[in-house]
Length: 437
Ligand code: S3P
Image (cartoon, rainbow, N blue to C red; front, side):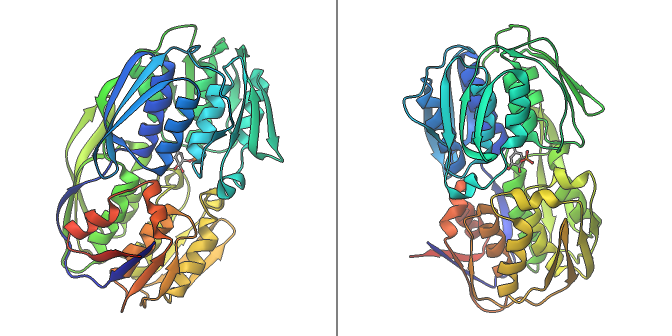
């Protein structure tokens, strides 16, 4: 499907976004490993989480999804404990969701049966050996296809590890923490940077003995039973990011987003935009089930270029496609470095931003570990492609709000993978955006 976007006047209003994607995945998989009924409101009901639901059901667990609005549902999982899973009768298909595949690898490593994980072409290109290798060290039999999916895992009794993570990846960290639930001994994970810590917080909420000091996670799983959860999931900062940047760059805008997760490991974009001159204010911050959440308001701002590198990169790892849009409107040079991981996402996010924003007239210079933009740059609407990357689709749409003429985003339905309701939310704010056949 195509998305048609036209230059828009002031965006105004107060909206919410669907529940956080990472927390939604974790609620489902940890809820299945817990004993009893887990209930989560504002759970993200989107393409990526549907894949996880299918896989958890294929492992014999009852899951109920009651839709409550675009991209939202109340989730109920009937967990049967760590050994309540049954052997799946077919390969577990993860679609394009790397989180689904990588988290399931950790769960399957604990199970006394063999299962195969697969996904569509885009997912088959993404690196899986970084998870497979430590799981083998713990005692699981993991066969990848040249380091990629399809992957076959035979799990069982595992031994805990003292392990230095080669990359600051929350998916790797989470996969190993899930595997630790079926392991003997104390697990120690040494992280090279502040990857998102939702798993640690959720495990603490479920009664686990786990903590993090100076980037080192210590977990004593020792045969305890995970307690089920009943809570409301805060809004996804990575979805709010599109609306925040839109509010900053469309003239005379004032946009408020209520109930967004403001966990420090996720607020890198906010800090960078503020440093660039963005008027962004957070209010009514409070904790909900161990996670901080707040309302965020933005007003149109004169942005200036900046440098992004080091530890903030991982705290805004999913936000670079939309950050490009802000940098293109900012005055002066923006340089992104130490972000090689962007090449291993849903697409090679350095290459595709150069190519697709290039069609709108943008000049972005690629570096092996990042990119460079000299702004502000005039954008001219034309036909662009989602490249089957949900975040690129939404970023191109936001760019279309300030481009001259009409922007058409092809294969834009991909955005349903993480933010169903994106178009309707922008329309509520007054944006000129609509679906076409
Ligand atoms: C995620 C971690 C990040 C992020 C992804 C979700 C998670 O990936 O890009 O969208 O839920 O743990 P990495 O851990 O590979 O950085």
